[in-house]
Amino acid sequence: TCLMVRYISIVTLLLLITASCVDRGALRALDSVESYITEEPDRALSALDSLSQAGIKGKEANARYALLYSMALDKNFIDIDTDSILAPAVEWYSRHGRLSDRMRTAYYLGRIRYNAQDFGSAIVCQMKAGEMAAELGDLFYQGMSSVAMADIYASTYNGMESLCYSRKAYRYFIESGNEEYAMMAMLGAGLSLNNLGKYSDARAAYDSVYVYSVEHKDSVLYSNSMLRLAHLETTAPDGNPARAVELYSRARNSGAVLSYGDWCSLVSALHLSG
Image (tube, rainbow, N blue to C red):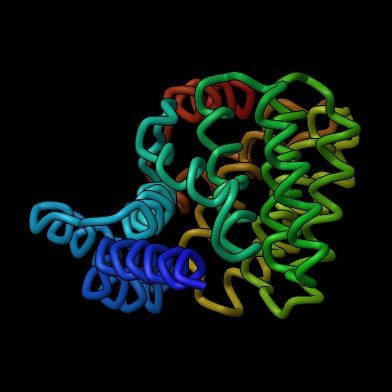
């Protein structure tokens, strides 16, 4: 009996020590950041930088911070190709925490591996993320993992698989009520169709996104759809170079920044249109 009492006392002490290592204040602050990270990713990144400077204690809080910081970087279009930032989350959520956090960790690890051009590992991560999203009934992240898979296959010149995953993503986003994300998936489908030489279908996909962007005053979709359409009208056998020149002009007037490839395409369109 005395041995049992001693054992219980030791276990209780260990639990108290473990609890004391959890940074409750940091976890509350991270809860707050997570509540606006999607709508205000720049504000979230700034808040996370401030938290880092203040110091975060405990493996759980550091794992949560690592996941949210990786999310904030991605949402601010800051690509990273090393696992070092996300590593605490990968380690912690492999054995602890919620399935939703494990799912998001797999998704963002897949994004990092994609940026590092480790496409085989990226596919494994995204497949795991998609499976966990399905288990959770999370249609949005099923869509996100499908978009990521489409990007991987597009980068490895597998147009049919890329198209398949873009269409899956579109359906998941529509079912989850995320129409803007569905239109981004439609842009991806249009690119795959264009690369497969299905120019009429690609044009229809881009046109549908363009119409949506005008109706909903979405500047990002507006400029992206015009640039994709302009490139198609320049390069497709049944293209319209004069329309391409007009689309490039409208895209620039809307504030779009043309890439080197866009400028080359514009020069070609100007030459072809006389």
